[in-house]
Amino acid sequence: MGGNKEGGDNQKKMFVGVVWNCAAEIKILLTALFFLCLTITLLQYFLPSRFSLSPSDLRLCVSSVTKLSNSEPPSLVLSPPPLKSPSPPPPPSLQQDETLGNGVIKRAFNPFGSAAYNFIQMGSYRGGLNSFAIIGLSSKPLHVYGKPHYQCEWVPLSNNQSDETVSTTITTTGYKILPDWGYGRVYTVVVVNCTFKDNPIIPIGGSLILYASTGAGGGFGDDGGGYTDRIESLIEKHDSFNVSVFDSPPKYDYLYCGSSLYGNLSPQRVREWIAYHVKLFGEKSHFVIHDAGGIHEDVLQVLLPWIEKGYVTLQDIREQERFDGYYHNQFLVVNDCLHRYRFMSKWMFFFDVDEFIYVPPKNTIGSVLESLRDYSQFTIEQMPMVNKLCLTDDLGKAPRKWGFEKLVYRDVKRGIRRDRKYAIQPRNVFATGVHMSQNVGGRTLHKTERRIKYFHYHGTIAERREPCRNYINSTELNFEGAPYVLDMTMRKAAASVKKFELKTIGDGLQRTRQ
Image (cartoon, rainbow, N blue to C red; front, side):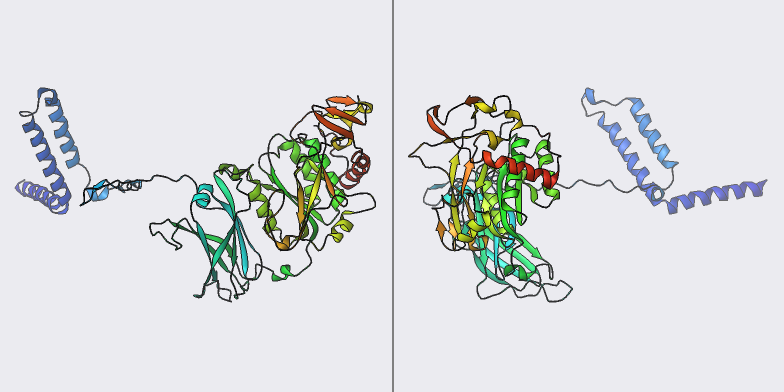
């Protein structure tokens, strides 16, 4: 009996010793909780009555201590600490007004945010072995009232498959062109030409870096006179660019660069326009359409057969609406189109989808442009057609006729200046506009009326209704203060265009609505 009691006492002492020696954490925790409860008890004599603690609070504290004493050692129940959310960056320190030694109060100015971006790049393209063009938008007030400038840097890759950058880089001053004639709004269009003189850049790979500085001091860097953005404009991998494109015959004879299309466009008017011009320009032609919100589902169905045939490329440019430029940034997109397809076409045309190019009988578009081959650019005279007068003979039949077939009255008002559209040989042009280019290497011809012209059906493309509002049986008339004459030129072409469409893409568009 005595031996058993002594053995039991020894076991209890051994257990206590193990706990006391192996659970140092428990000792620290119990001691801390003891002093916490003691502190709470003492504070009751010093705190106001509304902060008094009841006996039940003390019992709760004691019971918590008891539960912890019966639990496993903390090393066995530790959980990973909670993840901390990243702290927001500290706000910029504000400059304070300062009184100088001579008594002058130097006022502080603290800028926040940015009114407009320094540079918004849309595209960057090679212009030759040693030249590049970077097309984008920039703050218009910056270019009107400031002195922004650009620098270009080419960082080549080594001539092996590792794509390691070699240490030798070359730089040049970026020459800026503002092609939108001051029509920009918050943003203006900028074309930066980077020509590395006497340094042919063999396309073994590399990066084109644009340094866009807002400063007026002529230098680059944040020196107090502005700031500089470093923009990686173009990245070329090994053998990704074929230099033969510079001297090879272009893929297309004629390429159309369309301005931004927006609004609720008429599918039928678009159908007529694309069928007419594919027939006019022929198999070696291509049409680049820029969708700024106007290619809704009905218009897309009209374009899809021509896309599948390889005649049309559709580009979604709706994102540009974030940046307030002139007419949905049409100057931006035509300049991007110029440089993107510069070496892919012999001639490039710029006009709208309510305008129809026309060459006289016994001529073709090929023969006309061959006669103009010595010019880098020529402009095209406008034939303005009224958008609501039709022949009495078409009454009751108008919905079945195409727009350029039934709108047959031409405005002949004299003494006014009308807009022109134009075509260029793109390899001789550095930047372009909507009605003509002012940055052409070579001659421009304006007297082309007997060779080529265009019929303009203003106000018809954005209306999804029957255009005939008034039916007239006259060869000459005055309507709404303007003189008109009957002009059946385009009406005569309608039948052959309809047959061409049916032969080329079938009858899938026969039920197209206005």
